[in-house]
Each structure stands twice: as structure tokens, then as C-alpha cells.
Amino acid sequence: MAFPQPKPQPPQLPQHLLRTIDCQQGAVRAVRFNVDGNYLLSCGSDKSLKLWSVGRGTLLKTYSGHGYEVLDADGSYDNSQLCSCSSDKTVILWDVATGQVTRKLRGHAGKVNCVQFNEEGSVILSGSIDGTVRCWDTKSRRNEPIQVLDEARDSISSLKVAQHELLTGSVDGRVRRYDLRMGQLHVDFISSPITCVCFSQDGQCTLSSSLDSTVRLLDKSTGEMLGE
Image (cartoon, rainbow, N blue to C red):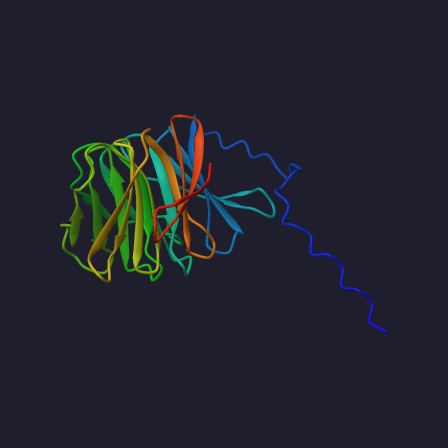
């Protein structure tokens, strides 16, 4: 006689507070986990980027080099490099261990809102208030971007990279998905300025939040609204 299988529990959202960190950076503009969740990056309005141990809540290193407040940051897959962006219009590539600036990338015409490595850590993608996404080769010594995506009609507020796809959200109310392998652009129009975008875990859907206080789940391939 076989016992019935226990019902699978639906995934629970985190409910209880584990730790509060006083970053002492003025306003905290962004907080990002590293790839394995053992470290945190905090971006401060005091122009600094700080690396924290999640387990102990201790400060490991402070990165100073931006001329204005830091708005976003990301860690490479092997934890050896960080990238950050700022209201000073620059993107900085950092060496994690030494805290030194490896490269300072200039080219955006206004503050840079969002930044992310690709999965191999070979390219940094940055989105700016100037309406462009710029792709920077981390290995090259050239200071020009390898590609500029300028389809947006207003500020880029959010971007996410997954394998060969790039998802961007803009204040012009459009979620754009670039298939970098096929050279294709797919656009979903949402009538309100986009504040944040991401892919679902299985890569089949996109999630976007906007200034009309709404979160929308869209089917990636058809653009069909699955929930809001």
C-alpha cells in the first residue's frame, strides 16, 4: 500500500526580517546580491559603492571613484569584477579584490540609471537618461562602446540580460526585447512609464512595473497579458 504523496507547498515570499544594515552612504539608491547571494552591493548618494557580507552583515570593502551618486551596480559571474553607474554619466569597472578602478567608461550624455554584466562577464550593458543602451567590451582597451541601442524615445529606467536576450524598460512606456543573436527587436507598449523590467525564472515571460502602480506579466513570444 502506497502512502499518498504530500501536497507540494507553493513557494512562500520571504516574511521575516533577517538583518538590517546601516550603510552610512546617505540615500541608498540600489542594493544588489552577487551571483551566489553571499554578498551584497549597496549604492550610495555619497558617491560610494560598498560590498557587504550577507551572513555577518559586515562591511568588506568600499569603492570610491564616482563623481556623483551611484545608481546601480552588478557583480561578474566569478566575483572578480564589479561594474557600477552614476549620475556623473560614467560606468566604472572595478577589481573586487584591490578596490581599484580598472576602467572608466564615458559616452552617455546624461546620468546612467542601470548597469549589468552579460553572463560571461565579457560585456557591460548600461542604460541612461539619454535614451540609449551602450554595450562595452570589458576586455578591450578601446573606450568606445561596441554597440549603441538608441530605439527608446526617453530615458532607459531598467535593463536585464539573459543569455542572448536583452530586456529594457523606458519612460516612453515601452518594454523592448532585443534578440541579440537574431538581430531582432520586439516592442510591447504599456501606456505608463516603465520603472523596472525582468524575465521570469523560466525565461518565457516578462514582468514590468510602471508609474500607474501596476505590475504586468506578459508572454514573451506573443506579448499577451497573462496577469496584472
